[in-house]
Image (cartoon, rainbow, N blue to C red):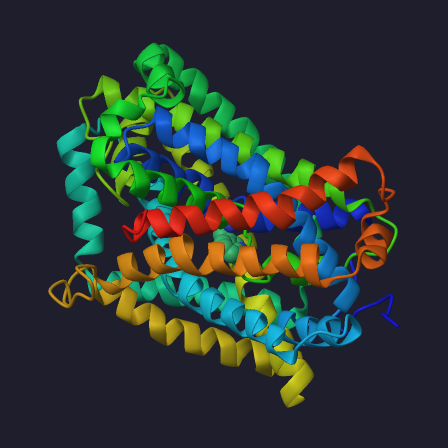
Amino acid sequence: MSSTTSVHGMWSSRLAFILAATGSAVGLGNIWRFPYTAGEYGGGAFVLVYLICVAGIGIPIMMAEIMLGRRGRQSPINTMKSLAREEGSSPFWQLLGWMGIVSGFLILSFYSVIAGWTLAYVFRAAGGLFTGAEAQMARAMFEALVSDPERLLAWHTIFMIMTGLVVARGVASGLERAVRWLMPALFLLLVVMVFYAAQAGDFTGGFSYMFSPDFARLGSRFGEAVLSAMGQAFFSLSLGMGAIMIYGSYLNSRASIGQNAIIIASMDTLVALLAGLAIFPIVLANGLEAGAGPGLIFQTLPIAFGQMPFGGLFGTVFFVLLVFAAWTSAISLLEPMTAWLVENRGFSRPRAAALGAIAVWLLGIACLLSLNLWSNVTVLGKGFLDLFDYVTANILLPLGGVCIAIFAGWIMRRVSSVDELALGERSFGYRTWLALVRFVAPACVILVFLNAIGLI
Ligand code: TRP
């Protein structure tokens, strides 16, 4: 018998869930990671594969995650344990929850460092440092930041404290209010920036860079690009590690899961595309390198803010909103491990959140040092920050997502999923969903993996 509430609290309404889940999905992944990854793979072809992955793999897996969370009503580890028992399957399914904890741990460690860059840029914008910026200067400003471990540590520490504090209080309380005004504000500001880019940058160039796919240009990097686009879809939608699962566990039993997943994924995708449309026209007009890597937006946006009217003000507001967006995402990364510590170790919520945050903070130090003092320490040719980013987005999240899809599609009895999704066993919606989680999502992920390791 599944319970109808979670001990960790419940969303006050369906809207509260949509806001919180959108808050988790929209973050640095959309505005920092999407443009730079798209830029690394030359734009159009990457964007097209990304959109296909969001629609064909992301939305059905998001539905599955929400569904499992809502049925289990606990941290991902215990949810998987009790659902596996309920469906008469193996207790090994709880390993999926453990894998999610590991992914969340690794992601948050570097996510917090990047959020720290964003915090630092709030003050650069507010201090008028962008005025008259051109490519050379923006680049020097970025490099001065990432080569200074003490500064990075200070910002990383502040961001982890912010995240730990909210999680310690319980996510159901403050999140809803914060996201309610944050999302519309971020959206509006992005639209303003797209308008600016349209007028001052090379908009047609930027637009066709993003939307005219040229697969031939990828050449031998085709498989790698597809893997990264798929990884980006998982990362941006917060899938495959239990964040959406645990948010689903605070959702009441009547809300329509399919509709919610489509709304959340659409908003997430819209924000990513707007970010791209704000950035690439500037990149092209200023002769910058689209494949500049993780520093792309930090080296591009200051140029735009430095030249536009009221750029200091817009820049400050933009980076403040980006900090908030990163914050609401980071909270969802810390929540699963906190809930587990509360359930299984009997910790109070503040103590559990503090423990999780401190552990992540320590690992984050390795990430920030990999940008400077430890730049020659590499594993598989990557420093820690790049390594954690690559391994989580491209391997752990898709793997977690596929296991979720397999559990929802093959292990769970149809009566259970029909009941949760409330779609009717013969309806088009249910049958499409079932085909996607049973066959399409697992097959796509496995093929992309096999291709990436050179087996096909
Ligand atoms: N989706 C967030 C972003 O785009 C990051 C994030 C939050 C995340 N929770 C997650 C990524 C869980 C993977 C899994 O910034």
